[in-house]
Amino acid sequence: MAWRLSVTHSTSFQYESEVSASFNEARMTPINTPDQFVISHDLKVNPFASIFSYSDYFGTAVKAFDVQTPHTYLEIVSQSLVETAVPKLGNVNASWDDLASDQLADDLREFLDFTALVNPIEAPFELRLKKTPLDAIHFLNKAMREQITYAPGSTSVYSPASEAWEKRAGVCQDFTHASLSILRSVGIPARYVSGYLYNGSGEIGEEVIGESHSWVEAWVGDWLPFDPTNGNPVAEDHVLVARGRDYHDVSPLKGIFSGGRSRKIEVKVSLTRIA
Image (cartoon, rainbow, N blue to C red):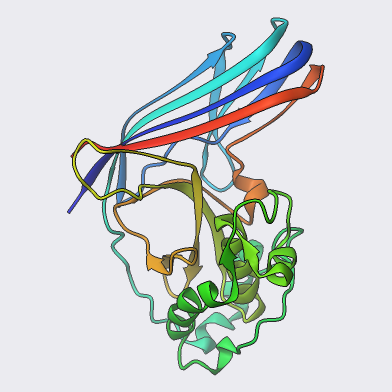
């Protein structure tokens, strides 16, 4: 059954002194997929800025803008109305031999290589002993919650998979990076997915306050999404925004500015099930 979700994502910056100019990229726009339809989306910037839209290399919708008016405050508000459904999967029965093909390695190389954030870790289990890559993914989805405790503040957005793994603590970003590291180490192509998670009761009209969320898509004949933070499959309660190799590719907001340092940053995400 399809859901209809309203998503508001706001970010504000308060600067110590006047900023003469800032240049930014926002990845806050949900994308259309066979299982997700964007009914409407609007991005507002205060102070006013002209917005240039494009799709990046991974198919993420990007809103680029620069503020040339001197300012001490910057606010970006993204509002979306999205219809979501449980992903319909194709063939996810690829064998270990299928994943070992040179053609696949060439086609999906960027999702097999380690990165600064998806760096090698020592997992206490051997996924290659599972009968199929799909079995390995189902095992990993449950095992991650036994290896890492959800603990906000234990890591930062710049923390690599190895840091959370050593601490055995982290947030969704860390569960995702660690899962990617383990999957890539055994030859399963895997990519970082960012978006939003509605974690309410499902009652129509209920608003829940949350934050950006992340999960994994692994290639096993088709892209199979799973959420290692919760150990659950991806369903109607997930809103997909961006895909990439790691968090650096999908950061909701990145940019530079000229002027005083940021004194205060506030982020708020709210989701409401409309239907």
